[in-house]
Amino acid sequence: MNAAITVTARYLPEGVLSNQDLERMLDTNDEWIRSRTGISERRILRDPKKATSYMCGEVASQLLQKRGLAVEDLELIIVATMTPDMLFPSTACLVQDIIGAKNAWAFDINAACSGFLYALNTASQFIKAGTHKNVMVIGADKMSSIIDYTDRSTAILFGDGAGGIILEAAESEDCGVLDARMYSDGRSGKDHLLMKGGGSLNPATHDTVDQHLHYIYQDGRMVFKSAVTSMADVAAEIMERNGLTSDDVSWLVPHQANQRIISATAERMGIDESKVISNVGRYGNTTAGTIPICLSELDDGGHLRHGSNLVLVSFGAGYTWGGVYVKWQ
Ligand code: COA
Image (tube, rainbow, N blue to C red; front, side, top):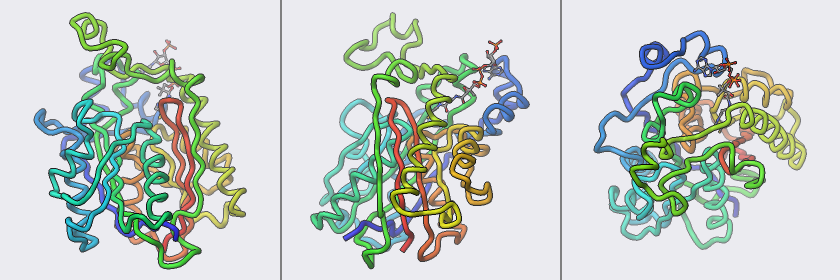
């Protein structure tokens, strides 16, 4: 039995951080940011008492309500995040508590920007195996908690947000999650996009704080090149394995890191821009949140119909990347 996405939801905090705001904080300008990234503004969860689990809780409640699923019937919660509230317990356990899903088990997956696709692929195996009737999958990141707002090369890129889905058995064999290809390459990726401090290698000390090790470090040019190649390659692989031409693809839903990466991926796939989902201009890169937020916006806009072919592709720290083919049920 394939796994089908039966409901979608998203949460974007109200606080807006615009390019004009960043102009006042950093040596940058709106024109540079928009031409290099396509980003105009991002959402920021400004309340210091609220963290990733809060955004996940908002998504989880909406999912249950929209689907009409009793919370006691929820069987598994998987949260993809690289900004957990704390190293442990998992954010998924905090979400379980927030919504009162006492019969669900819960765990986190950390694959950075590919986290949602890794979690979607993992979750679909539980449905496929027939051991679970429903699994909630949420991708969420409070990126503002790990951004150095004095570093203009990273501060402009990221925002906060969360999106999620529930997976259940598909109504028929020809729809649902039909294919997935996942990749990792720690050898190439580990030095180019990382947070050096706060783990067992560099536990927090005054020194790690002074050295800004608790913030994102990124070699933007290296990451850019690998992201374009890997997202395009995995998208082409998904299309080829499933006999899809560019005309067959209803929507390309790429990870939202940078408009230039999105456009380059679409171009290599030969997919018309009108079928490529992009909201990076409004939200920036919300890391594990990007793909489920896009799905939720598509769904709410009435753009997902029975038989719609969706190709989801992502790339992120690790490196990690992947592609998933979903036929909407
Ligand atoms: N405002 C103005 N100038 C900036 C700037 C900013 N916010 N950030 C960098 N610059 C400057 C640099 O200092 C550099 O100046 P120099 O030539 O005098 O040294 C110049 O702009 C070009 O920098 P470069 O890093 O080559 O720019 P770029 O075209 O590669 O764009 C990124 C930078 C970060 C936007 C781009 O590399 C990128 O998007 N990379 C991928 C990031 C990503 O998506 N990460 C998440 C992956 S999931």
